[in-house]
Image 1: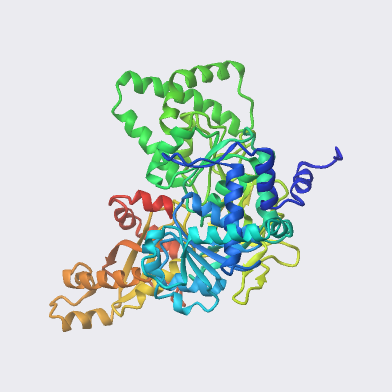
Image 2: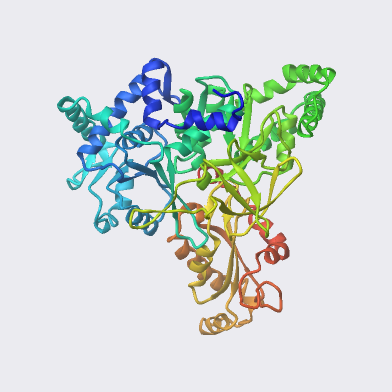
Length: 622
Protein backbone atom coordinates (compact mmCIF):
# COMPACT_ATOMS: atom_id res chain seq x y z
CA UNK A 1 0.00 0.00 0.00
CA UNK A 2 1.29 3.46 -0.90
CA UNK A 3 2.82 5.02 2.26
CA UNK A 4 1.50 8.37 1.09
CA UNK A 5 -2.06 7.15 1.54
CA UNK A 6 -3.90 8.75 4.41
CA UNK A 7 -5.54 6.62 7.07
CA UNK A 8 -8.91 7.44 5.51
CA UNK A 9 -7.62 6.25 2.11
CA UNK A 10 -6.50 2.99 3.68
CA UNK A 11 -9.91 2.55 5.31
CA UNK A 12 -11.60 3.14 1.95
CA UNK A 13 -9.38 0.54 0.25
CA UNK A 14 -10.01 -1.99 3.01
CA UNK A 15 -13.78 -1.59 2.80
CA UNK A 16 -14.00 -1.21 -0.97
CA UNK A 17 -15.06 -4.70 -2.05
CA UNK A 18 -16.44 -6.16 1.17
CA UNK A 19 -19.99 -7.21 1.91
CA UNK A 20 -21.54 -8.59 5.08
CA UNK A 21 -21.93 -12.10 3.56
CA UNK A 22 -18.28 -12.09 2.47
CA UNK A 23 -17.21 -11.27 6.03
CA UNK A 24 -19.44 -13.96 7.49
CA UNK A 25 -17.93 -16.45 5.04
CA UNK A 26 -14.45 -15.40 6.18
CA UNK A 27 -15.40 -15.84 9.82
CA UNK A 28 -16.92 -19.28 9.20
CA UNK A 29 -13.74 -20.47 7.51
CA UNK A 30 -10.91 -18.64 9.31
CA UNK A 31 -12.49 -18.40 12.78
CA UNK A 32 -14.90 -21.32 12.56
CA UNK A 33 -14.70 -22.42 16.20
CA UNK A 34 -14.60 -19.00 17.84
CA UNK A 35 -17.77 -17.95 19.70
CA UNK A 36 -20.04 -15.60 17.79
CA UNK A 37 -23.38 -15.25 19.57
CA UNK A 38 -24.59 -16.03 23.10
CA UNK A 39 -27.66 -15.14 25.13
CA UNK A 40 -27.08 -13.99 28.69
CA UNK A 41 -27.71 -16.79 31.23
CA UNK A 42 -28.28 -19.39 28.51
CA UNK A 43 -26.10 -22.20 27.24
CA UNK A 44 -26.71 -21.38 23.57
CA UNK A 45 -23.39 -20.14 22.21
CA UNK A 46 -23.03 -20.43 18.45
CA UNK A 47 -19.62 -20.49 16.81
CA UNK A 48 -19.07 -18.60 13.59
CA UNK A 49 -19.33 -21.82 11.59
CA UNK A 50 -22.58 -22.80 13.31
CA UNK A 51 -24.00 -19.33 12.87
CA UNK A 52 -23.32 -19.32 9.15
CA UNK A 53 -24.80 -22.81 8.70
CA UNK A 54 -28.05 -21.66 10.29
CA UNK A 55 -28.06 -18.49 8.21
CA UNK A 56 -27.62 -20.57 5.06
CA UNK A 57 -30.59 -22.79 5.93
CA UNK A 58 -32.86 -19.89 6.75
CA UNK A 59 -31.76 -17.96 3.69
CA UNK A 60 -32.88 -20.76 1.41
CA UNK A 61 -36.08 -21.06 3.39
CA UNK A 62 -36.92 -17.38 3.08
CA UNK A 63 -36.39 -17.62 -0.66
CA UNK A 64 -38.71 -20.61 -0.68
CA UNK A 65 -41.56 -18.70 0.96
CA UNK A 66 -41.33 -15.74 -1.41
CA UNK A 67 -38.65 -13.32 -0.24
CA UNK A 68 -36.88 -12.02 -3.35
CA UNK A 69 -33.56 -10.20 -3.92
CA UNK A 70 -34.29 -6.54 -3.33
CA UNK A 71 -37.48 -7.40 -1.45
CA UNK A 72 -38.21 -6.03 2.02
CA UNK A 73 -38.62 -8.09 5.17
CA UNK A 74 -39.98 -6.55 8.39
CA UNK A 75 -38.98 -7.97 11.77
CA UNK A 76 -40.84 -7.32 15.02
CA UNK A 77 -39.04 -9.38 17.60
CA UNK A 78 -37.16 -8.96 20.87
CA UNK A 79 -33.40 -9.35 21.12
CA UNK A 80 -32.80 -13.06 20.70
CA UNK A 81 -30.55 -15.18 18.46
CA UNK A 82 -33.30 -15.75 15.88
CA UNK A 83 -33.37 -12.00 15.28
CA UNK A 84 -29.74 -12.07 14.15
CA UNK A 85 -30.27 -15.26 12.13
CA UNK A 86 -33.29 -14.16 10.08
CA UNK A 87 -31.79 -10.72 9.50
CA UNK A 88 -28.56 -12.14 8.12
CA UNK A 89 -30.46 -14.80 6.18
CA UNK A 90 -32.36 -12.08 4.31
CA UNK A 91 -29.13 -10.18 3.66
CA UNK A 92 -27.58 -13.27 2.06
CA UNK A 93 -30.48 -13.31 -0.43
CA UNK A 94 -29.87 -9.72 -1.39
CA UNK A 95 -33.13 -8.83 0.38
CA UNK A 96 -33.44 -5.93 2.82
CA UNK A 97 -34.35 -6.63 6.46
CA UNK A 98 -35.88 -3.92 8.60
CA UNK A 99 -36.39 -4.20 12.34
CA UNK A 100 -39.27 -2.09 13.63
CA UNK A 101 -40.01 -1.10 17.20
CA UNK A 102 -42.56 -3.30 19.01
CA UNK A 103 -44.02 -0.16 20.57
CA UNK A 104 -45.48 1.09 17.27
CA UNK A 105 -49.19 1.77 17.09
CA UNK A 106 -51.41 -0.18 14.69
CA UNK A 107 -51.54 2.75 12.26
CA UNK A 108 -47.77 3.04 12.31
CA UNK A 109 -47.29 -0.68 11.68
CA UNK A 110 -49.64 -0.48 8.71
CA UNK A 111 -47.83 2.55 7.31
CA UNK A 112 -44.40 0.93 7.51
CA UNK A 113 -45.56 -2.36 6.03
CA UNK A 114 -47.25 -0.59 3.12
CA UNK A 115 -44.42 1.88 2.55
CA UNK A 116 -41.78 -0.85 2.54
CA UNK A 117 -43.93 -3.14 0.39
CA UNK A 118 -42.90 -5.92 2.76
CA UNK A 119 -42.93 -9.42 1.28
CA UNK A 120 -42.26 -11.25 4.55
CA UNK A 121 -43.12 -10.33 8.12
CA UNK A 122 -41.23 -12.09 10.93
CA UNK A 123 -42.92 -11.92 14.33
CA UNK A 124 -41.98 -13.28 17.72
CA UNK A 125 -45.18 -15.04 18.66
CA UNK A 126 -48.90 -14.99 19.35
CA UNK A 127 -49.00 -11.55 20.99
CA UNK A 128 -47.35 -9.91 17.99
CA UNK A 129 -49.54 -11.82 15.56
CA UNK A 130 -52.66 -10.64 17.37
CA UNK A 131 -51.50 -7.04 17.03
CA UNK A 132 -50.97 -7.47 13.31
CA UNK A 133 -54.21 -9.31 12.50
CA UNK A 134 -56.15 -6.19 11.56
CA UNK A 135 -53.27 -4.96 9.40
CA UNK A 136 -52.50 -8.09 7.38
CA UNK A 137 -55.48 -7.88 4.97
CA UNK A 138 -54.28 -4.41 3.90
CA UNK A 139 -50.84 -5.56 2.71
CA UNK A 140 -50.94 -6.50 -0.99
CA UNK A 141 -47.24 -7.40 -1.24
CA UNK A 142 -47.12 -9.63 1.83
CA UNK A 143 -46.50 -13.29 1.03
CA UNK A 144 -45.83 -14.88 4.38
CA UNK A 145 -45.91 -14.23 8.08
CA UNK A 146 -43.27 -16.16 10.02
CA UNK A 147 -43.60 -16.87 13.74
CA UNK A 148 -40.51 -17.65 15.79
CA UNK A 149 -42.43 -19.11 18.73
CA UNK A 150 -44.37 -21.96 17.16
CA UNK A 151 -46.87 -22.31 19.98
CA UNK A 152 -48.18 -18.92 18.93
CA UNK A 153 -49.47 -20.32 15.65
CA UNK A 154 -52.46 -22.16 17.06
CA UNK A 155 -55.07 -22.51 14.34
CA UNK A 156 -54.07 -19.44 12.34
CA UNK A 157 -54.32 -19.34 8.58
CA UNK A 158 -51.78 -20.94 6.30
CA UNK A 159 -50.29 -17.51 5.65
CA UNK A 160 -48.42 -17.83 8.98
CA UNK A 161 -45.69 -20.44 9.21
CA UNK A 162 -43.29 -21.35 12.02
CA UNK A 163 -39.61 -20.54 11.69
CA UNK A 164 -38.89 -24.27 11.85
CA UNK A 165 -40.84 -24.65 8.60
CA UNK A 166 -38.71 -21.97 6.96
CA UNK A 167 -35.62 -23.85 8.08
CA UNK A 168 -36.97 -27.13 6.66
CA UNK A 169 -37.72 -25.48 3.33
CA UNK A 170 -34.17 -24.17 3.26
CA UNK A 171 -32.67 -27.57 4.07
CA UNK A 172 -34.61 -29.17 1.24
CA UNK A 173 -33.59 -26.41 -1.16
CA UNK A 174 -29.94 -26.86 -0.21
CA UNK A 175 -30.13 -30.59 -0.92
CA UNK A 176 -31.66 -29.86 -4.32
CA UNK A 177 -29.12 -27.13 -5.23
CA UNK A 178 -26.14 -27.01 -2.84
CA UNK A 179 -24.49 -24.14 -4.73
CA UNK A 180 -27.47 -21.77 -4.63
CA UNK A 181 -26.54 -20.16 -1.30
CA UNK A 182 -23.04 -19.25 -2.46
CA UNK A 183 -24.29 -18.01 -5.83
CA UNK A 184 -26.75 -15.66 -4.17
CA UNK A 185 -24.43 -14.02 -1.66
CA UNK A 186 -21.48 -13.78 -4.04
CA UNK A 187 -23.65 -11.75 -6.41
CA UNK A 188 -24.22 -9.06 -3.78
CA UNK A 189 -22.30 -5.82 -4.30
CA UNK A 190 -21.11 -3.33 -1.64
CA UNK A 191 -23.41 -0.57 -2.88
CA UNK A 192 -26.54 -2.69 -2.36
CA UNK A 193 -28.79 -2.12 0.67
CA UNK A 194 -27.99 -4.10 3.80
CA UNK A 195 -30.84 -2.77 5.92
CA UNK A 196 -33.71 -0.31 6.05
CA UNK A 197 -34.23 1.65 9.27
CA UNK A 198 -37.22 3.86 9.91
CA UNK A 199 -36.62 7.08 11.78
CA UNK A 200 -39.09 9.75 12.85
CA UNK A 201 -39.41 12.84 10.70
CA UNK A 202 -40.43 16.26 11.91
CA UNK A 203 -43.95 15.75 10.51
CA UNK A 204 -44.33 12.47 12.36
CA UNK A 205 -44.12 10.39 9.17
CA UNK A 206 -41.30 7.84 9.52
CA UNK A 207 -38.55 7.96 6.92
CA UNK A 208 -36.96 4.77 5.66
CA UNK A 209 -33.18 5.18 5.72
CA UNK A 210 -31.44 2.87 3.26
CA UNK A 211 -27.96 1.81 4.40
CA UNK A 212 -25.57 -0.09 2.14
CA UNK A 213 -23.03 -2.82 2.85
CA UNK A 214 -20.32 -0.24 2.19
CA UNK A 215 -21.83 2.18 4.72
CA UNK A 216 -21.76 -0.28 7.60
CA UNK A 217 -18.44 -1.92 6.73
CA UNK A 218 -16.67 1.40 6.27
CA UNK A 219 -17.96 2.40 9.72
CA UNK A 220 -16.43 -0.78 11.16
CA UNK A 221 -13.12 -0.26 9.37
CA UNK A 222 -12.91 3.38 10.48
CA UNK A 223 -13.78 2.48 14.07
CA UNK A 224 -11.08 -0.19 14.11
CA UNK A 225 -8.54 2.35 12.83
CA UNK A 226 -9.56 4.92 15.45
CA UNK A 227 -10.27 2.82 18.54
CA UNK A 228 -7.82 0.15 19.62
CA UNK A 229 -9.51 -2.91 21.11
CA UNK A 230 -8.39 -6.55 20.82
CA UNK A 231 -9.53 -8.73 17.94
CA UNK A 232 -12.43 -11.09 18.69
CA UNK A 233 -13.48 -8.89 21.62
CA UNK A 234 -16.65 -9.65 23.58
CA UNK A 235 -19.50 -7.15 23.56
CA UNK A 236 -22.98 -6.75 25.01
CA UNK A 237 -26.07 -6.09 22.84
CA UNK A 238 -28.92 -4.52 24.81
CA UNK A 239 -30.56 -1.85 22.64
CA UNK A 240 -33.30 -2.70 20.12
CA UNK A 241 -31.99 -3.68 16.69
CA UNK A 242 -34.23 -0.96 15.22
CA UNK A 243 -31.68 1.46 16.75
CA UNK A 244 -28.75 2.26 14.44
CA UNK A 245 -26.27 2.03 17.33
CA UNK A 246 -27.20 -1.55 18.18
CA UNK A 247 -27.60 -2.63 14.60
CA UNK A 248 -24.05 -1.53 13.90
CA UNK A 249 -22.44 -2.52 17.21
CA UNK A 250 -24.48 -5.71 17.64
CA UNK A 251 -24.37 -7.07 14.08
CA UNK A 252 -22.02 -5.46 11.58
CA UNK A 253 -19.05 -4.50 13.73
CA UNK A 254 -18.81 -7.94 15.41
CA UNK A 255 -18.96 -9.58 11.99
CA UNK A 256 -16.12 -7.39 10.77
CA UNK A 257 -14.05 -7.98 13.92
CA UNK A 258 -15.15 -11.63 14.38
CA UNK A 259 -16.19 -10.67 17.89
CA UNK A 260 -18.39 -12.41 20.42
CA UNK A 261 -21.79 -10.83 21.08
CA UNK A 262 -23.71 -11.55 24.27
CA UNK A 263 -27.37 -10.66 23.90
CA UNK A 264 -28.99 -9.03 26.92
CA UNK A 265 -32.72 -9.51 26.17
CA UNK A 266 -33.84 -7.62 29.28
CA UNK A 267 -32.28 -4.15 29.58
CA UNK A 268 -32.83 -4.21 33.34
CA UNK A 269 -30.15 -6.93 33.39
CA UNK A 270 -27.58 -4.76 31.60
CA UNK A 271 -25.27 -4.34 34.60
CA UNK A 272 -25.32 -8.09 35.15
CA UNK A 273 -24.45 -8.59 31.48
CA UNK A 274 -21.57 -6.13 31.69
CA UNK A 275 -20.26 -7.82 34.82
CA UNK A 276 -20.49 -11.22 33.14
CA UNK A 277 -18.82 -10.17 29.89
CA UNK A 278 -16.44 -7.40 30.98
CA UNK A 279 -16.25 -5.88 27.47
CA UNK A 280 -13.35 -3.61 26.45
CA UNK A 281 -15.74 -1.19 24.74
CA UNK A 282 -19.31 -0.16 25.37
CA UNK A 283 -21.75 2.37 23.93
CA UNK A 284 -24.42 3.71 26.24
CA UNK A 285 -27.21 6.14 25.55
CA UNK A 286 -27.05 9.02 28.07
CA UNK A 287 -29.74 7.55 30.29
CA UNK A 288 -27.59 4.46 30.89
CA UNK A 289 -24.59 6.52 31.98
CA UNK A 290 -26.80 8.76 34.13
CA UNK A 291 -28.24 5.76 35.94
CA UNK A 292 -24.79 4.24 36.44
CA UNK A 293 -23.52 7.48 37.94
CA UNK A 294 -26.61 7.77 40.15
CA UNK A 295 -26.16 4.18 41.34
CA UNK A 296 -22.55 4.75 42.37
CA UNK A 297 -23.46 8.01 44.08
CA UNK A 298 -26.25 6.31 46.02
CA UNK A 299 -23.83 3.57 47.08
CA UNK A 300 -21.23 6.08 48.26
CA UNK A 301 -23.84 8.11 50.14
CA UNK A 302 -24.40 5.18 52.52
CA UNK A 303 -20.76 4.12 52.73
CA UNK A 304 -18.49 4.58 55.73
CA UNK A 305 -16.74 7.97 55.98
CA UNK A 306 -13.38 6.32 55.32
CA UNK A 307 -14.69 4.81 52.08
CA UNK A 308 -16.12 8.16 51.01
CA UNK A 309 -12.83 9.89 51.74
CA UNK A 310 -10.86 7.28 49.81
CA UNK A 311 -13.12 7.67 46.79
CA UNK A 312 -12.95 11.47 46.98
CA UNK A 313 -9.15 11.37 46.92
CA UNK A 314 -8.95 8.80 44.14
CA UNK A 315 -11.57 10.63 42.10
CA UNK A 316 -9.65 13.87 42.37
CA UNK A 317 -6.56 12.19 40.92
CA UNK A 318 -8.56 10.63 38.06
CA UNK A 319 -10.22 13.96 37.28
CA UNK A 320 -6.89 15.76 37.23
CA UNK A 321 -5.54 13.33 34.67
CA UNK A 322 -8.79 13.47 32.69
CA UNK A 323 -8.70 17.26 32.45
CA UNK A 324 -5.12 17.19 31.19
CA UNK A 325 -6.04 14.68 28.49
CA UNK A 326 -9.12 16.69 27.54
CA UNK A 327 -6.86 19.73 27.08
CA UNK A 328 -4.57 17.72 24.85
CA UNK A 329 -1.75 17.67 27.40
CA UNK A 330 0.39 14.78 28.58
CA UNK A 331 -0.16 13.26 32.02
CA UNK A 332 3.07 13.63 34.05
CA UNK A 333 4.70 10.41 35.22
CA UNK A 334 4.15 11.28 38.87
CA UNK A 335 0.41 11.82 38.32
CA UNK A 336 0.18 8.68 36.19
CA UNK A 337 1.71 6.67 39.05
CA UNK A 338 -0.77 8.10 41.55
CA UNK A 339 -3.60 7.36 39.15
CA UNK A 340 -2.47 3.75 38.74
CA UNK A 341 -2.44 3.38 42.51
CA UNK A 342 -5.88 4.98 42.85
CA UNK A 343 -7.31 2.69 40.17
CA UNK A 344 -5.85 -0.44 41.72
CA UNK A 345 -7.01 0.27 45.27
CA UNK A 346 -10.24 2.24 44.90
CA UNK A 347 -11.54 2.85 41.40
CA UNK A 348 -11.27 -0.53 39.72
CA UNK A 349 -13.34 -2.30 42.39
CA UNK A 350 -16.07 0.29 41.82
CA UNK A 351 -15.75 -0.08 38.05
CA UNK A 352 -16.17 -3.83 38.50
CA UNK A 353 -19.54 -3.33 40.15
CA UNK A 354 -20.66 -1.86 36.81
CA UNK A 355 -18.77 -4.29 34.59
CA UNK A 356 -16.53 -1.52 33.28
CA UNK A 357 -13.20 -2.70 34.68
CA UNK A 358 -11.79 -3.64 31.24
CA UNK A 359 -13.01 -0.54 29.44
CA UNK A 360 -10.73 0.84 26.73
CA UNK A 361 -13.36 2.95 24.98
CA UNK A 362 -16.71 4.05 26.40
CA UNK A 363 -19.01 6.02 24.13
CA UNK A 364 -22.19 8.03 24.51
CA UNK A 365 -24.46 9.31 21.82
CA UNK A 366 -28.00 9.54 20.41
CA UNK A 367 -28.69 12.50 22.73
CA UNK A 368 -26.65 15.03 24.71
CA UNK A 369 -25.20 13.91 28.04
CA UNK A 370 -24.73 16.33 30.96
CA UNK A 371 -21.11 17.35 31.48
CA UNK A 372 -21.52 16.74 35.22
CA UNK A 373 -22.22 13.07 34.48
CA UNK A 374 -19.14 12.87 32.25
CA UNK A 375 -16.98 14.37 34.96
CA UNK A 376 -18.32 12.08 37.67
CA UNK A 377 -17.63 9.02 35.52
CA UNK A 378 -14.18 10.37 34.67
CA UNK A 379 -13.57 10.61 38.41
CA UNK A 380 -14.53 6.94 38.55
CA UNK A 381 -11.77 6.26 36.04
CA UNK A 382 -14.12 5.78 33.07
CA UNK A 383 -13.71 8.31 30.26
CA UNK A 384 -17.06 8.40 28.49
CA UNK A 385 -16.52 10.02 25.10
CA UNK A 386 -19.35 11.59 23.13
CA UNK A 387 -20.02 10.81 19.50
CA UNK A 388 -22.52 12.36 17.15
CA UNK A 389 -24.40 11.23 14.11
CA UNK A 390 -27.74 9.96 12.94
CA UNK A 391 -29.24 6.96 11.22
CA UNK A 392 -28.54 8.73 7.93
CA UNK A 393 -24.80 8.75 8.73
CA UNK A 394 -24.69 5.07 9.74
CA UNK A 395 -24.49 6.21 13.34
CA UNK A 396 -21.28 8.00 14.21
CA UNK A 397 -20.17 10.88 11.97
CA UNK A 398 -17.96 12.62 14.54
CA UNK A 399 -16.12 10.96 17.39
CA UNK A 400 -14.07 11.73 20.48
CA UNK A 401 -11.10 9.41 20.89
CA UNK A 402 -9.07 8.40 23.93
CA UNK A 403 -6.05 10.12 22.40
CA UNK A 404 -7.97 13.26 21.50
CA UNK A 405 -11.21 14.51 23.04
CA UNK A 406 -12.87 17.63 24.35
CA UNK A 407 -15.48 17.43 27.09
CA UNK A 408 -18.80 18.89 26.00
CA UNK A 409 -18.09 18.39 22.30
CA UNK A 410 -19.04 15.49 20.06
CA UNK A 411 -15.55 15.15 18.67
CA UNK A 412 -13.99 15.57 15.27
CA UNK A 413 -15.06 14.07 11.93
CA UNK A 414 -14.76 10.32 11.66
CA UNK A 415 -12.15 9.07 9.17
CA UNK A 416 -13.15 10.02 5.64
CA UNK A 417 -15.98 12.27 6.79
CA UNK A 418 -16.16 16.02 6.23
CA UNK A 419 -18.10 18.45 8.39
CA UNK A 420 -18.81 22.12 7.79
CA UNK A 421 -21.35 24.70 8.88
CA UNK A 422 -23.89 26.40 6.67
CA UNK A 423 -24.40 30.14 6.90
CA UNK A 424 -27.07 29.65 9.55
CA UNK A 425 -24.90 27.28 11.58
CA UNK A 426 -26.54 24.06 10.39
CA UNK A 427 -24.14 21.13 10.44
CA UNK A 428 -23.47 19.66 6.99
CA UNK A 429 -21.70 16.34 6.47
CA UNK A 430 -20.50 14.27 3.56
CA UNK A 431 -18.50 11.12 3.12
CA UNK A 432 -18.71 7.33 2.94
CA UNK A 433 -21.00 7.02 5.98
CA UNK A 434 -23.86 9.02 4.45
CA UNK A 435 -26.70 6.64 3.55
CA UNK A 436 -27.98 5.89 0.07
CA UNK A 437 -31.12 7.93 0.74
CA UNK A 438 -34.74 7.51 1.81
CA UNK A 439 -36.93 4.72 0.49
CA UNK A 440 -39.81 5.98 -1.62
CA UNK A 441 -43.19 4.29 -1.66
CA UNK A 442 -42.54 2.98 -5.16
CA UNK A 443 -39.38 1.19 -4.06
CA UNK A 444 -36.91 3.70 -5.47
CA UNK A 445 -34.43 5.57 -3.28
CA UNK A 446 -34.56 9.35 -2.89
CA UNK A 447 -31.11 10.94 -2.53
CA UNK A 448 -30.77 13.17 0.53
CA UNK A 449 -27.59 15.05 -0.36
CA UNK A 450 -27.13 18.16 -2.49
CA UNK A 451 -25.27 18.32 -5.79
CA UNK A 452 -21.94 18.43 -3.96
CA UNK A 453 -22.75 15.48 -1.71
CA UNK A 454 -23.53 17.42 1.49
CA UNK A 455 -26.23 16.22 3.87
CA UNK A 456 -28.03 18.91 5.86
CA UNK A 457 -28.44 17.31 9.29
CA UNK A 458 -30.89 19.72 10.90
CA UNK A 459 -28.51 20.20 13.84
CA UNK A 460 -26.88 23.55 14.55
CA UNK A 461 -23.40 23.71 15.95
CA UNK A 462 -20.00 25.33 16.26
CA UNK A 463 -16.54 24.07 15.34
CA UNK A 464 -13.54 25.17 17.38
CA UNK A 465 -10.03 25.86 16.12
CA UNK A 466 -9.03 22.23 16.70
CA UNK A 467 -11.93 20.90 14.66
CA UNK A 468 -14.13 19.72 17.55
CA UNK A 469 -17.86 20.00 16.89
CA UNK A 470 -20.31 21.18 19.54
CA UNK A 471 -24.03 20.72 18.88
CA UNK A 472 -25.88 23.76 20.18
CA UNK A 473 -29.41 23.44 18.80
CA UNK A 474 -31.64 21.74 16.28
CA UNK A 475 -33.34 23.36 13.35
CA UNK A 476 -35.91 20.62 13.23
CA UNK A 477 -38.56 20.47 15.88
CA UNK A 478 -37.58 17.03 17.05
CA UNK A 479 -37.47 15.61 20.56
CA UNK A 480 -34.56 13.28 21.33
CA UNK A 481 -35.19 11.59 24.66
CA UNK A 482 -32.37 10.70 27.03
CA UNK A 483 -32.43 7.16 25.60
CA UNK A 484 -31.91 8.48 22.08
CA UNK A 485 -35.43 7.96 20.74
CA UNK A 486 -36.37 10.50 18.04
CA UNK A 487 -39.91 11.80 18.49
CA UNK A 488 -41.91 14.36 16.55
CA UNK A 489 -43.54 16.78 19.01
CA UNK A 490 -45.76 18.20 16.27
CA UNK A 491 -47.34 14.78 15.73
CA UNK A 492 -48.18 14.40 19.43
CA UNK A 493 -49.42 17.98 19.72
CA UNK A 494 -51.67 17.58 16.70
CA UNK A 495 -53.36 14.55 18.24
CA UNK A 496 -53.88 16.39 21.51
CA UNK A 497 -55.32 19.46 19.81
CA UNK A 498 -57.84 17.24 18.07
CA UNK A 499 -59.91 17.50 21.25
CA UNK A 500 -61.98 20.70 21.18
CA UNK A 501 -61.13 21.60 24.77
CA UNK A 502 -57.43 21.82 23.99
CA UNK A 503 -56.37 25.05 22.35
CA UNK A 504 -52.61 24.56 22.50
CA UNK A 505 -50.30 21.79 23.61
CA UNK A 506 -46.57 21.45 23.72
CA UNK A 507 -44.85 18.09 24.07
CA UNK A 508 -41.81 18.06 26.34
CA UNK A 509 -39.15 15.38 26.44
CA UNK A 510 -35.91 16.55 24.88
CA UNK A 511 -33.04 15.05 26.93
CA UNK A 512 -35.70 13.73 29.31
CA UNK A 513 -36.60 10.08 30.00
CA UNK A 514 -40.16 10.30 28.69
CA UNK A 515 -42.72 12.66 27.13
CA UNK A 516 -44.95 15.02 29.09
CA UNK A 517 -47.14 17.89 27.95
CA UNK A 518 -48.22 21.39 28.85
CA UNK A 519 -51.82 21.95 27.82
CA UNK A 520 -53.68 25.22 27.32
CA UNK A 521 -57.47 25.20 27.21
CA UNK A 522 -59.37 26.71 24.32
CA UNK A 523 -60.54 30.00 25.79
CA UNK A 524 -63.86 29.86 23.95
CA UNK A 525 -64.78 26.19 24.02
CA UNK A 526 -63.67 25.47 27.58
CA UNK A 527 -66.02 27.98 29.30
CA UNK A 528 -68.93 26.73 27.21
CA UNK A 529 -68.15 23.13 28.06
CA UNK A 530 -67.89 24.05 31.73
CA UNK A 531 -71.27 25.74 31.85
CA UNK A 532 -72.91 22.83 30.03
CA UNK A 533 -71.50 20.51 32.69
CA UNK A 534 -72.72 22.60 35.59
CA UNK A 535 -69.33 23.98 36.59
CA UNK A 536 -69.84 27.28 38.34
CA UNK A 537 -66.36 28.70 37.77
CA UNK A 538 -66.11 28.74 33.97
CA UNK A 539 -62.97 30.88 33.76
CA UNK A 540 -59.66 29.34 32.65
CA UNK A 541 -57.79 29.76 35.94
CA UNK A 542 -60.44 27.83 37.82
CA UNK A 543 -61.01 25.25 35.11
CA UNK A 544 -57.33 24.35 35.05
CA UNK A 545 -57.76 22.54 38.35
CA UNK A 546 -61.37 21.39 38.07
CA UNK A 547 -61.59 17.58 38.57
CA UNK A 548 -64.31 17.08 35.97
CA UNK A 549 -62.46 18.99 33.30
CA UNK A 550 -59.15 17.32 34.17
CA UNK A 551 -60.84 13.95 33.72
CA UNK A 552 -61.96 15.02 30.26
CA UNK A 553 -58.42 16.18 29.38
CA UNK A 554 -57.09 12.86 30.65
CA UNK A 555 -59.49 11.10 28.30
CA UNK A 556 -58.17 13.25 25.44
CA UNK A 557 -54.59 12.34 26.34
CA UNK A 558 -55.54 8.66 26.54
CA UNK A 559 -57.12 8.87 23.08
CA UNK A 560 -53.99 10.46 21.66
CA UNK A 561 -51.76 7.88 23.35
CA UNK A 562 -53.76 5.07 21.75
CA UNK A 563 -52.53 6.33 18.38
CA UNK A 564 -48.92 6.76 19.44
CA UNK A 565 -45.99 4.40 19.88
CA UNK A 566 -45.19 3.79 23.54
CA UNK A 567 -42.09 6.05 23.66
CA UNK A 568 -44.20 8.86 22.15
CA UNK A 569 -47.02 8.60 24.65
CA UNK A 570 -47.64 11.42 27.10
CA UNK A 571 -46.94 10.10 30.60
CA UNK A 572 -48.31 13.09 32.50
CA UNK A 573 -49.43 16.64 31.81
CA UNK A 574 -50.32 19.97 33.36
CA UNK A 575 -53.23 22.17 32.32
CA UNK A 576 -52.12 25.80 32.50
CA UNK A 577 -54.41 28.49 33.94
CA UNK A 578 -54.06 31.04 31.12
CA UNK A 579 -54.12 31.10 27.35
CA UNK A 580 -51.17 31.67 25.02
CA UNK A 581 -51.15 34.54 22.52
CA UNK A 582 -48.57 36.40 20.43
CA UNK A 583 -48.85 39.23 22.92
CA UNK A 584 -48.02 36.97 25.88
CA UNK A 585 -45.01 35.66 23.98
CA UNK A 586 -45.63 31.89 23.75
CA UNK A 587 -46.88 32.12 20.14
CA UNK A 588 -45.51 33.77 17.02
CA UNK A 589 -47.66 36.22 15.04
CA UNK A 590 -48.63 33.26 12.86
CA UNK A 591 -49.61 31.33 16.00
CA UNK A 592 -46.68 28.91 15.96
CA UNK A 593 -45.24 27.75 19.26
CA UNK A 594 -42.20 29.59 20.58
CA UNK A 595 -40.71 26.48 22.17
CA UNK A 596 -37.74 28.12 23.80
CA UNK A 597 -39.91 30.75 25.43
CA UNK A 598 -42.31 28.11 26.71
CA UNK A 599 -39.56 25.88 28.11
CA UNK A 600 -37.89 28.82 29.85
CA UNK A 601 -41.12 30.33 31.18
CA UNK A 602 -42.58 27.09 32.48
CA UNK A 603 -39.37 25.48 33.64
CA UNK A 604 -40.63 24.87 37.18
CA UNK A 605 -43.83 23.24 35.92
CA UNK A 606 -41.85 21.05 33.53
CA UNK A 607 -39.45 19.96 36.26
CA UNK A 608 -42.41 19.07 38.47
CA UNK A 609 -43.74 16.74 35.75
CA UNK A 610 -40.52 14.73 35.98
CA UNK A 611 -40.46 14.29 39.73
CA UNK A 612 -42.60 11.18 39.34
CA UNK A 613 -41.01 7.72 39.13
CA UNK A 614 -38.79 7.39 36.07
CA UNK A 615 -39.91 4.51 33.80
CA UNK A 616 -36.29 3.44 33.43
CA UNK A 617 -36.68 0.33 31.33
CA UNK A 618 -38.85 2.02 28.73
CA UNK A 619 -36.50 5.00 28.53
CA UNK A 620 -33.56 2.68 27.90
CA UNK A 621 -35.21 0.50 25.27
CA UNK A 622 -36.92 3.25 23.32
